[in-house]
Image (cartoon, rainbow, N blue to C red):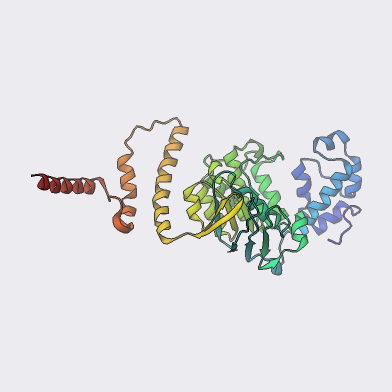
Length: 376
């Protein structure tokens, strides 16, 4: 960025970058007079107010310049588009080599599975850091088949990776609509108002509890916060790589979240213990003792079993919602469960489970008849 931002009058900054006002909105501080420079503005602010926001005067100026740098570089150039990501294996905790290489393209999801302590979080960290053989595992991450340039690793404005952790908290006291508007303007979105509606609606599909654009982000529940950030990453952010850690514990619809990220062309890595989420992925990486043990492609048979597990999951989810809402679970679950799964069972290889209770009874009677013939 060529502009001398620290010494340029704010009105000139606004002229070049109309969305710069989002910086002051995000911090909840008044916008400066148009004739002031950011340096003069920082010097004019009450020191106690700055401390309350977590800055000193120099820190505020540096944060403003970093924010403006992010705006100016927020839309990736065509040559910077991420088409693929490759993980080249390193070694496990004992130093044994990982004979593994994994290539993912836009829209691909890979699940990371293994017991607690197996190395899922370490692999996510390697991807976030875009490791180049310089992390404890010795792994390397390639973008579009090439070594990652240092600027992609060390400058926050050039980041490629978004991370969704299990615990998220907002510190800005904005409404949901203001938060989305701020991010949309920073990303040069052509229709910010329409984007707000799209993100809020999408988040309410994923979240277990609905909220509106007027809800303050600081009052969102954990599930609502994660739903908002997932849709924001999918629809607003240009970051092409998304890391998700145990989304099944987030109080949201994880399958809907992953489908949205996949449809927007993100490369998604999800660490999970949930078999439904693990089988939704194109591939899964099996970890043990800090190392990659296997890379398994999801098979057609596993896809058929996934259909059964998803139906079971929906029944459990409905029961969970009923309990949350103070309702009783007294209706027999056997009949709706059998009816829900009948079509899937009927087409399963070897018809390994009965299509419905009636057919099961018929099979039992036939078996009992054969048993009587044998014992007479």
